[in-house]
Length: 337
Image 1 (cartoon, rainbow, N blue to C red):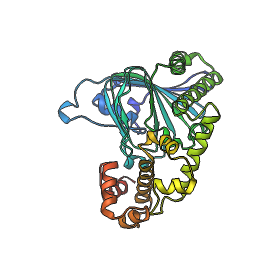
Image 2 (tube, rainbow, N blue to C red):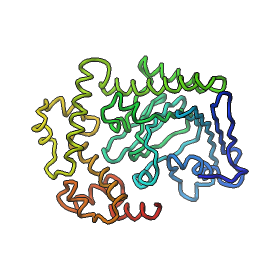
Image 3 (spheres, rainbow, N blue to C red):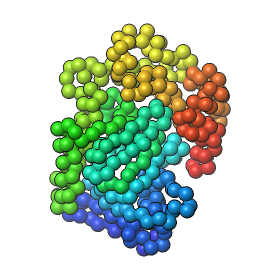
Image 4 (cartoon, helix red, strand yellow):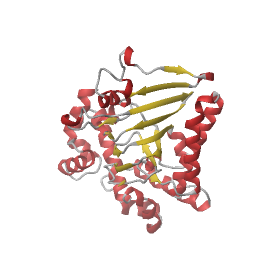
């Protein structure tokens, strides 16, 4: 969102084409600080506003954004915030990268990805992974957080289904995660003195370390057994996506079709809430896409086409996932398109 010229953050071209932009609510004079912050970060994520009676309370935040070619990260300090990306929001923007939030100070809690029901309360120094194409809601306490935006191709090198990383957290208690936090803190402190090549290499190294850490957590990288798990995950994912519109698609059908060990398969999808939840999650995401992109398709046709037994079953599942009925979602997307 564009700001008035008098309020635009200063864009400073650092040496060797490192571009930095800075914004602080302390410089805000024409808007309430929280509203100004919402406008500043609103192109990425929505700030959930408090009741009107609390809107005028003091709020401090600042953000430095560094762009080096195609790679980018931000260094943000802020008071407590509630943030979310809804499916309605996702349907109307083009952000499809992955976001890795490294908390140098403070923490995040009440992370909810809604569709799969996953959530958690990461502790100080945690790292959170977000697939920007999926909904999420979180309470971010007063913190300093470094945010890396990573292309899906890099995540896919470790995760056969990159979306499976969404909502995962790791803590700063292992040698690898401590190394990541130290590397990120050093990068944030010294990037202003780096050349473009040095900054590009440091940002990419951080991104690779982050993906590797989540891959290690999910046991999807590192040895032959992990490679076999990754191959199995990819096989199942492809089968489900190819048969998503089949009414009888179920965990039992996947097991029968692929002849995979039941225990291993269910363990592989444990973080998704189980294989059945994973199938339902993909169907609801596809339904949201159909509602947004195919205005002439009826809700009933979408429901039956994606294997739901009735339009009412579909409506209940969609409402649980996205906190609104399919018709309301379609109307909202149509309003803001």
